[in-house]
Image (cartoon, rainbow, N blue to C red; front, side, top):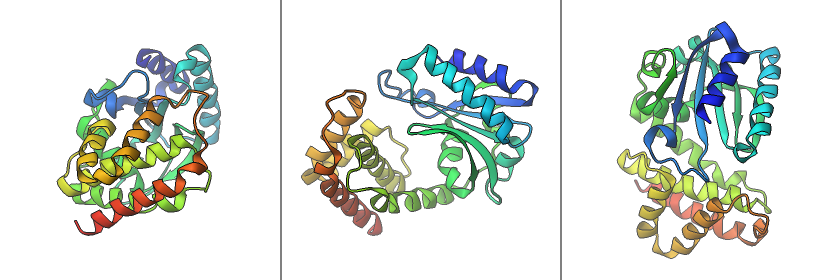
Length: 246
């Protein structure tokens, strides 16, 4: 599938494509074929505009039309080389498609260090120069500060009927963030879940449930999210308290 995505992006962006790199689970060999996303950064000569975004929407629609099993499982950030070079000091416009969100233009600031840092560390070049030559060195402390800020906002992002899938994502990201902040470890969701069950034995059932939700996220018989939101919020609160003590 990566080859199909690569060819589609090349056809759409043409000479404006500087490079294309994988990051995330496929780059770190933690990829789970039935549930993991494909994460890519496409580097362009200039920041994307609405005209390019429109063409990219059509491109991604054709990709999932031909391979529906990848619907909502392809994540690409389309960002200029200048935007990456200035990522520690300035914001930039990018085009982004990610699970749960259609392709759209967004201003990317320091919050995107959550992507740029692991991509620079582990990125695998598909086309063009390696990301290490395009993204400046990012201090680990600055990356972890963004992780902490991201996790702090989870509880307030939930509606009272948040879907099981969104709750599972939050639970597993809280697990990953805990060990990133405490020990500088960037674990897979499954690895972090296993460690967190030992750290928070009272929540082991909830973490197991999050993994089942994740594994069965495309099944039609998912429970109603309202039944579990209070418990998910309580878990997030417990992890946040643990992080404040770190």
